[in-house]
Length: 256
Image (cartoon, rainbow, N blue to C red; front, side, top):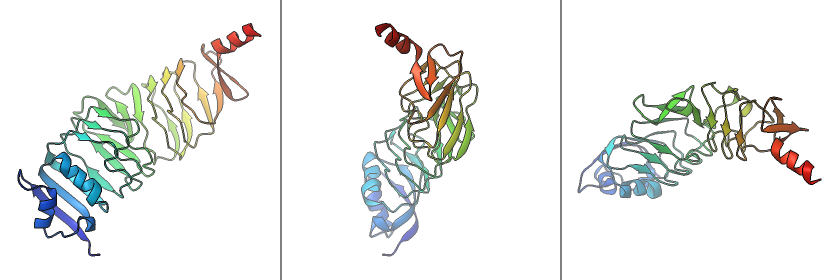
């Protein structure tokens, strides 16, 4: 099969992606590995990429407009090494880039307001999120995705390995924030964090976690790890490495 390595097309109202590729000499869209698109793109064009251009390695849609959502499983299990999404995107849905195992970095443009916590699950080599400085919702630091004022840690790139110290500006760790980060071997949660969201540390490489005094809410956040808890924490204690809520433990004793 002959591969068309670098293809650039410009879309027009009466020239959609399928026709633009044919005009560029592409007979089989599955042979295209590098694609640059300009002009107004539609959901149908995105669907055409999803179902007909599964061998794409690099996709540049930075010069397009018209699409507001990267929808559910849009690029699921693609072999993408690089993608630039349209500046018009406002939302990235569940598993939109799930298991894109060759994706190493991702840039979030100005208008993005909502990124599903599972949008990048299984991207085992993703090490860097970067965010446009004018984005009103998100920011990044050392490749990690936060809300704008860095009080909430949104997503930790699954491809980062080793130890990580959460910045002390963080008061909340979001749902699924560290999920599938199998190379994460150690985490330091600062005494600023008050809430740890649902499945925040599920399927990681962690074997032990220390819960600081400040944490008041843990929503089924961890897999099988050994817990230690700051003795001044008013909500949680650890017993033989297991996490317990003090109130529930006291209630159990009263029943006995």
